[in-house]
Image (tube, rainbow, N blue to C red):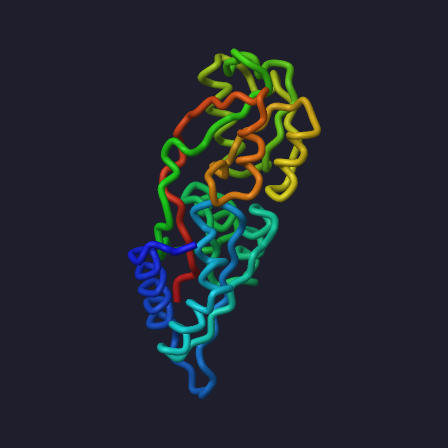
Length: 226
């Protein structure tokens, strides 16, 4: 896997800006930063940069320490960022305006990692289905996330009400397997691209149909302002 040079450059420039923005310390210890990410195609470069030593190389160059951690639950990663456990977190621009803001955390969009325009969708099991067929069904999604918003918009387009469906919360790491072994319908939170280990398996199932609805725009990695 080779990362585009422009993306690597943006990541490095963003972290350098993070280092410059941090308050000065009298200690000789290098400034340390903790960043978390969760599984989404546009955020996989963080894991790659950590595992391949790319981040370590640039951190050494600028005399800082950067700890990159994968958090298996998307909403959980935002909550841990909001609680102060991490300095930065990969999340959608919409979600940065909800959980962190509600917790009184001011954030800055430091790096725009990708655009998910058209990548988000709802997967429906069975041929020839439309959004109207959501009525009376159980829907798998990550509650209180941008996926929840996608479902709300879809129901609005289909002239349905929230009470017309039953929502079942499933974490990102379990949603693909849950869909395979169930007869549910699943909002896809943009994780259906080749870099994602779960969604392609769902897409390849002969009885899955995908209804695309772009909605989310930029993916962003906010950080706490100095």
